[in-house]
Length: 192
Image: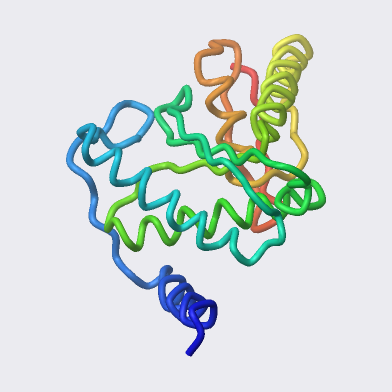
């Protein structure tokens, strides 16, 4: 069996059954729900996630890439991929990037045995998208409070909805809730 075929089989085995497998809870977490880990445990999560990401990137024709790791505002681990011609990793409306993040997160959870938020970004794409979502959230809060009516936002991914909830959690004028099912799930901003 060639090394590439062997890697494919290992990857498929890792992804298989992720939904069914129970995941241990990590002792302690901060108010954002992010587990509190020692530096060694965090390094292990980062090394595992980077290794998984590198294995997946072998199947894309993107050439040499650099993966920078850093901690996000909410304590999540952010892996930012930089290189030449990485548009294929983002895909239309970020769908490929969302799928890539799902795979890396799911396999990391499976290998580590507990959940720790891992965000995969490509040349700051998600950072720019986050800024846009934060602006949309603040605008919706202003409209909801000013017009004293609920504002329904467009359907969003779980990651995008989380950004809206986080952006508005300290705004005393409004509350947020997710409604709908599947790809139609969206955030509603409700005045208080």
